[in-house]
Amino acid sequence: MGQIKIGDLGLSRLFSENTIVAKTMISTEYYKAPERTNPAIFGYHFKSDIWSLGCLLYELCTLRSPFNGEIDNAYALHKKICSAKYLPFPSQSYSDQLQFFVKSCMSVSSCDRPSAENCHFAARRMYIHFETLLMKYKKANGIS
Image (tube, rainbow, N blue to C red; front, side):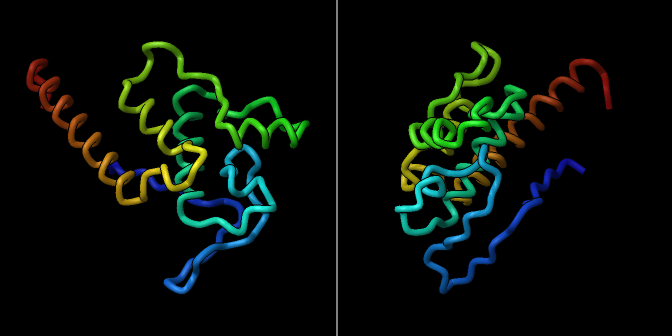
Protein backbone atom coordinates (compact mmCIF):
# COMPACT_ATOMS: atom_id res chain seq x y z
CA MET A 1 0.00 0.00 0.00
CA GLY A 2 1.17 3.55 -0.64
CA GLN A 3 3.17 2.66 -3.75
CA ILE A 4 2.59 3.95 -7.25
CA LYS A 5 4.04 2.11 -10.20
CA ILE A 6 4.22 3.59 -13.67
CA GLY A 7 4.47 1.22 -16.59
CA ASP A 8 5.25 1.73 -20.23
CA LEU A 9 2.20 0.39 -22.04
CA GLY A 10 3.61 0.99 -25.49
CA LEU A 11 7.02 0.05 -26.79
CA SER A 12 9.78 -0.17 -24.24
CA ARG A 13 13.49 -0.16 -24.85
CA LEU A 14 16.05 -2.03 -22.76
CA PHE A 15 19.21 -0.14 -21.93
CA SER A 16 22.41 -1.78 -20.79
CA GLU A 17 25.64 -0.29 -19.51
CA ASN A 18 26.85 -0.40 -23.13
CA THR A 19 23.90 1.64 -24.46
CA ILE A 20 24.81 5.24 -25.14
CA VAL A 21 21.66 6.33 -26.97
CA ALA A 22 18.58 4.65 -28.44
CA LYS A 23 16.99 5.38 -31.80
CA THR A 24 13.44 3.95 -31.79
CA MET A 25 10.81 6.33 -33.17
CA ILE A 26 7.62 4.77 -31.74
CA SER A 27 6.04 6.55 -28.78
CA THR A 28 3.02 8.57 -27.70
CA GLU A 29 3.30 11.95 -29.41
CA TYR A 30 2.08 13.97 -26.42
CA TYR A 31 4.86 12.63 -24.19
CA LYS A 32 7.75 12.74 -26.64
CA ALA A 33 10.78 14.65 -25.43
CA PRO A 34 12.13 17.40 -27.74
CA GLU A 35 15.11 15.26 -28.72
CA ARG A 36 12.69 12.56 -29.90
CA THR A 37 10.74 14.89 -32.21
CA ASN A 38 13.74 15.92 -34.26
CA PRO A 39 15.14 13.18 -36.52
CA ALA A 40 18.34 15.22 -36.97
CA ILE A 41 19.23 14.67 -33.32
CA PHE A 42 21.11 11.43 -32.84
CA GLY A 43 19.26 9.26 -30.34
CA TYR A 44 17.84 9.71 -26.87
CA HIS A 45 18.54 8.40 -23.38
CA PHE A 46 17.15 8.14 -19.84
CA LYS A 47 16.46 11.87 -19.57
CA SER A 48 13.82 11.47 -22.30
CA ASP A 49 11.82 9.45 -19.78
CA ILE A 50 12.15 12.27 -17.25
CA TRP A 51 10.47 14.57 -19.81
CA SER A 52 7.62 12.06 -20.09
CA LEU A 53 7.35 11.93 -16.28
CA GLY A 54 6.95 15.73 -16.25
CA CYS A 55 4.19 15.47 -18.88
CA LEU A 56 2.43 12.80 -16.85
CA LEU A 57 2.61 14.82 -13.61
CA TYR A 58 1.34 17.89 -15.45
CA GLU A 59 -1.61 15.90 -16.79
CA LEU A 60 -2.41 14.42 -13.38
CA CYS A 61 -2.51 17.92 -11.89
CA THR A 62 -4.36 19.77 -14.65
CA LEU A 63 -6.42 16.92 -16.14
CA ARG A 64 -5.08 17.76 -19.61
CA SER A 65 -1.97 16.99 -21.60
CA PRO A 66 0.55 19.85 -21.63
CA PHE A 67 0.38 19.86 -25.43
CA ASN A 68 -3.28 18.95 -25.86
CA GLY A 69 -5.12 19.96 -28.99
CA GLU A 70 -2.31 19.57 -31.50
CA ILE A 71 -2.72 15.90 -32.44
CA ASP A 72 -4.06 16.80 -35.91
CA ASN A 73 -1.03 18.95 -36.65
CA ALA A 74 2.21 17.09 -35.90
CA TYR A 75 4.35 20.08 -36.91
CA ALA A 76 2.57 22.40 -34.43
CA LEU A 77 2.72 19.73 -31.72
CA HIS A 78 6.46 19.18 -32.19
CA LYS A 79 7.06 22.93 -32.26
CA LYS A 80 5.28 23.33 -28.89
CA ILE A 81 7.21 20.42 -27.45
CA CYS A 82 10.57 21.74 -28.69
CA SER A 83 9.91 25.08 -27.02
CA ALA A 84 8.16 23.55 -23.97
CA LYS A 85 5.16 25.83 -24.51
CA TYR A 86 2.27 24.65 -22.39
CA LEU A 87 -0.44 26.32 -20.34
CA PRO A 88 0.62 27.19 -16.79
CA PHE A 89 -0.82 25.38 -13.80
CA PRO A 90 -4.08 26.81 -12.50
CA SER A 91 -3.05 29.67 -10.23
CA GLN A 92 -2.49 28.77 -6.58
CA SER A 93 -3.68 25.17 -7.08
CA TYR A 94 -0.31 23.49 -6.58
CA SER A 95 2.82 24.27 -4.62
CA ASP A 96 5.66 26.20 -6.16
CA GLN A 97 7.86 23.17 -5.52
CA LEU A 98 5.64 20.84 -7.55
CA GLN A 99 5.38 23.35 -10.39
CA PHE A 100 9.17 23.80 -10.37
CA PHE A 101 9.69 20.04 -10.39
CA VAL A 102 7.40 19.58 -13.41
CA LYS A 103 9.07 22.50 -15.19
CA SER A 104 12.50 20.99 -14.45
CA CYS A 105 11.43 17.63 -15.85
CA MET A 106 10.16 19.38 -18.97
CA SER A 107 13.34 21.37 -19.64
CA VAL A 108 14.02 21.54 -23.37
CA SER A 109 17.66 20.61 -22.83
CA SER A 110 17.95 17.07 -21.47
CA CYS A 111 21.06 18.13 -19.51
CA ASP A 112 18.88 20.47 -17.43
CA ARG A 113 16.41 17.75 -16.41
CA PRO A 114 16.79 16.02 -13.05
CA SER A 115 18.17 12.50 -12.93
CA ALA A 116 16.02 9.52 -11.96
CA GLU A 117 17.80 9.57 -8.61
CA ASN A 118 16.89 13.25 -8.10
CA CYS A 119 13.25 12.46 -8.95
CA HIS A 120 13.19 9.58 -6.49
CA PHE A 121 14.73 11.76 -3.77
CA ALA A 122 12.13 14.49 -4.37
CA ALA A 123 9.27 11.98 -4.30
CA ARG A 124 10.60 10.41 -1.11
CA ARG A 125 10.85 13.80 0.63
CA MET A 126 7.32 14.67 -0.49
CA TYR A 127 6.03 11.34 0.82
CA ILE A 128 7.67 11.89 4.22
CA HIS A 129 6.27 15.43 4.37
CA PHE A 130 2.71 14.28 3.70
CA GLU A 131 2.98 11.33 6.07
CA THR A 132 3.99 13.81 8.79
CA LEU A 133 1.02 16.04 7.95
CA LEU A 134 -1.32 13.04 8.01
CA MET A 135 -0.06 11.94 11.43
CA LYS A 136 -0.57 15.47 12.81
CA TYR A 137 -4.07 15.58 11.34
CA LYS A 138 -4.99 12.20 12.83
CA LYS A 139 -3.61 13.18 16.22
CA ALA A 140 -5.48 16.51 16.19
CA ASN A 141 -8.74 14.76 15.26
CA GLY A 142 -8.38 11.71 17.51
CA ILE A 143 -8.08 9.31 14.58
CA SER A 144 -5.92 6.24 14.97
